[in-house]
Image 1: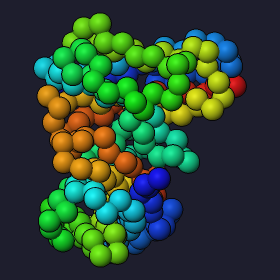
Image 2 (image 1 turned 180 degrees about the vertical axis):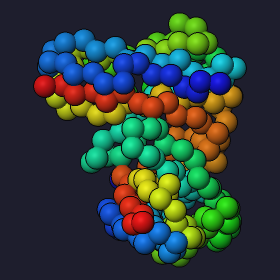
Image 3 (image 1 turned 60 degrees about the vertical axis):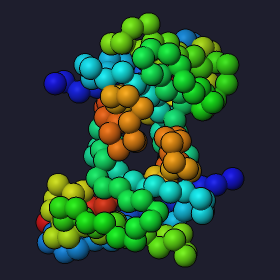
Image 4 (image 1 turned 135 degrees about the vertical axis):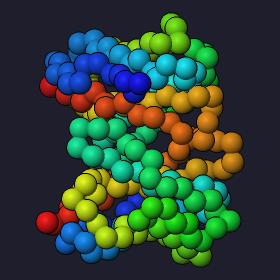
Length: 113
Length: 115
């Protein structure tokens, strides 16, 4: 079946450095992707999204890159802060109008002060 | 706004017992989603409601799981009988209409442990 997965389960980054979290997806028909942040004891929180007709989208300190050729998604966080420590996971939407997302299992990002 | 409210936050029960998880969506939201999160499978959509009506329950694992939404401000997810493999964190989320997934607001979750 189709799945969304992550390359790295854990990542430690020095405060102030940039971090990159990766995600591989297998459904070539997926048209929409989301990155979520989940802090300990809390529910997932939307960070940024990107549609399949784009290859890059920027937000505040975050950038999502989409490479449809290799079905790869990445989340870049610039100038990391202690509050960025959390689990990050991606999700894909199989087609337009179908809001049943497929979620990855997550990467734990730890910011070292 | 208090956000999505879930109760209990933690539940420990023995195999075979009935478990009821509760959710109060954000006031004014008319769509409600139940998710289950495990280390192995990540976050999975179980069922979602729009205007208190179940729209898609294809994610409900089996007949032991049932969900209801008797009114716009309350929903329950029931597991009867519970099994150890049901141990997970269960999230409720709400949105206005069947909005894109990014506009769903998640509650803090209920951590269920079935022994």
